[in-house]
Image (cartoon, rainbow, N blue to C red):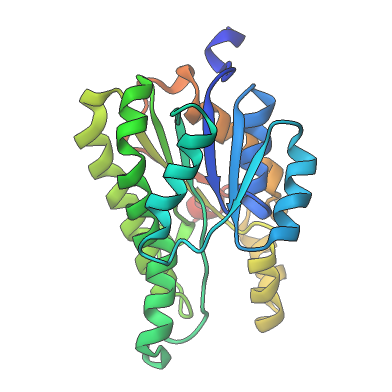
Length: 253
């Protein structure tokens, strides 16, 4: 059975893979044998992540909101991997917490461009290599806010809801090319992003614990297994799904 989870020889690109959920997923992929390429804007964080992920891991600095950056990144990856890319994880993301009427155009598009448009551009650029792989995998990172709303998350929720619909379209369009596309919907996970939310809303910590059946915040390591599963041959017939990883938060009545 373990052979169907074996990713040896496969190349995985994880955006935002230098910390948080991205690093948690990268560790899961690496544990199953994949060769990792990670991106992040911070060179020091990139270097620290490479040290954790092990020998052979590559890291590139990239600002994926630059319209030219996704294509350039894919070209760098292919140049460094003998033209191969098997797994794409679109994890890079941001949030600006405000009431809907308070967003400026610049703030709205900062969230949409990072969470949605950059993922589309990168996925589009990666398509030829994913098709050539014969078992291409796209893993997009949505959110529990893909499912329901929040008073300070209109831009974030809009981008993450759209990511789920984009994933479904990819699944339908690219299945004949041997490419699967699935989304992971994180719940409340202990990351830099959510620590900022807790500072802004001090009552958030206890309210999350009260509603989460698992009675804890998630950890980035909770994403190692789901990423490895969706990237592997074990999930060859799984496509177009949106899988919550939230300790039961989104199903708690």
